[in-house]
Image (cartoon, rainbow over all chains, first blue to last red; front, side):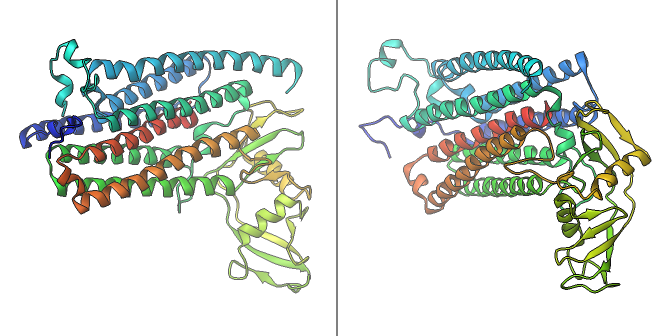
Length: 125
Length: 346
């Protein structure tokens, strides 16, 4: 059913059975990837948890988690949410403002937290 | 699946009016805007969590030490249940994508099948989260112990020695001298924990029951118990480990000391056995907000499912509604991926 007052983009985004099979294969591959990454994260968390690793080794593991989480997030946003299939201007409009803000906020809060921690240990909580 | 987005179109037509410059419908665009705003909200929560956590430093609870229980099972399974929950949510996201893909082929049966799977996954997740909350509030079998030097330690053990019975030594309103109380008469564990936390205990394994009688506790030995200090005292420092007979002695000295709150169980608004008060606050707040979003997502999915079954979307010619609900559901999964990393792992 085609209307003449609005453009119904979704009426033209259908695909055939064969294309569907290819797309499903991609979905299953990404699923396997996400599960594998989660399994690795949990494995590292159990054997090299914060309880028994300190110093530089812990910092490495922490960044390892963060990088893996960002990879997982990227796959979920780009493949599952289909942002990867959208126009470049939409992709950029969604991602760029968010990333600018969140990276700044993470930086400033962690910096402040370290200073607050120092103040608390010097002068008491 | 890319549709109009990958079409080559000149700028004049694209921005000339009537077309969406992003070549998506109004509904989908608005859903993306909402998701960005919600992502900012959750980002803010997690950053605040990071702020508090870093200010506290070493005192902060450790993920694999705090979350090591499975429902209905004894023993130590660090992070297992949380890993299950993460995997479950990812799988429910996958079934949602498959539902959208079926929609792109106008396969009504496929859409319904995968949407039902997504809803079931969501329900199991919320149920699991509810169990996690109740277990967190109720506390572990051992609780947190305040040792003689004022330091506080958490308890690790392979097995909590089962409480076999209470033998009444002094009569109360209800129980007579010499009466042996087992799990048939009362929940021994529950009574034990209540009495210990309230300080209704005395040396030589005696506890005061709720009717005023005093009974001797008969309890099996714990297996593999050791203490890890989480708050320094005059003798022990942070992360000191106390093992073997010394651990058992210090723990049960506190249990039968008769002082209230030497052992605390679980978490609530005033104190918690896991660490600083802020920890419990953030746990409930962030996982609560997330669980709330999941619940709303389940309701939305059910409404969309009804629309699918009635054939509304098939008549429309496209399943874009399923796609929009899918975007929201994937966002919920995305937030959980971050909560999982920053709460349980780091």
